[in-house]
Length: 273
Length: 199
Image (cartoon, rainbow over all chains, first blue to last red):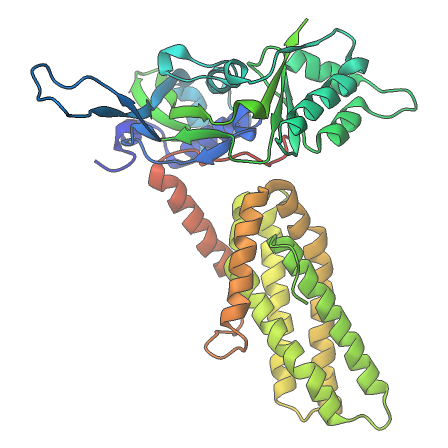
């Protein structure tokens, strides 16, 4: 089996040009929405067959029943990769049109799938995913949760306080502000006294970006100095094939990942409120 | 000339600055009356070597990554750059065939300078700006270390192929590599986005 056999792409009735279009559309839809991976260090892709991230620690466990005295036993701790798969459908008529040179193919279901895929990855990193053994940034933060009010003119002061608290614990910058889409929109629409854009003010306070973050509730101030958060990926987002009939081809987006928060003091939660 | 930063784009910009300074020194040497061929050679020889090596280092290290990471028509920027490199090389190598200080030598040096001026201006406006906007800082620094190592390993052009390249064939080769890399793991090749601007 090669690295890509499991995707079964050779079985799909999709010519090369249409594959390129589907992949290009998937890439262009996913990339801007994958907000959480903009905040994390990256490890991967390690391949479909890789199934875990070692955390370099052990946990003491009891020895086998009836074992001899004086034996120490411990189990290696690992974070298993979790598979995320999001099915979508492409009509065969659209595939034919792409082959004819159409540049306005209807790939709406792919767009829906890309959004679902990005939100799943984002939520796993931001809010955690207990079934997958992932503790998210919101859960691990070593600081009390602050509150974002409704008045976004107060955000620079709130963010500056968060940055000061992190610096006070020796966590250097630059820092980023990940924020939910609705609050992001309000930020970019807002001009402060003197005509200064709020988003520019926040960027100056942070030394880093304000990141539009679908799937995040509220906001997070996150150090971007590196070494604090790790997204480990086995297979990065790929398009695979499931089945087809005379009308449509069933495909899916797929990824394997885990996430490890190493330094709880490198993130502060700003909750809705 | 060595740049304090390990970022490859900072290092390229530092080289550009050095090239500009050396051509001004050449102007000064030309203005001396009578022009001293030894003084001209003292400026031109290291400048010619560095122009050749700089072009090769960019072709081996910078432009393959611009084609991977750039978003502002990196293919066109690369085609232009390789064409400019050829023009610079042609001038540098033509100068070698003439006696230093002769009108023929000056014509070749001027051709190299004009091609280099055009190249630096375009590269700073296009390829470097695009790469700074889209390549993560960690990648730029890793490439910067490769770039610096290239010059440590090649103080002269000995053993370095400084002949012209076909721009189209160069871009096709790199793009085939990129496609094969993507096909290799079957993924969309999104990878790390840390440090990239969210457009």
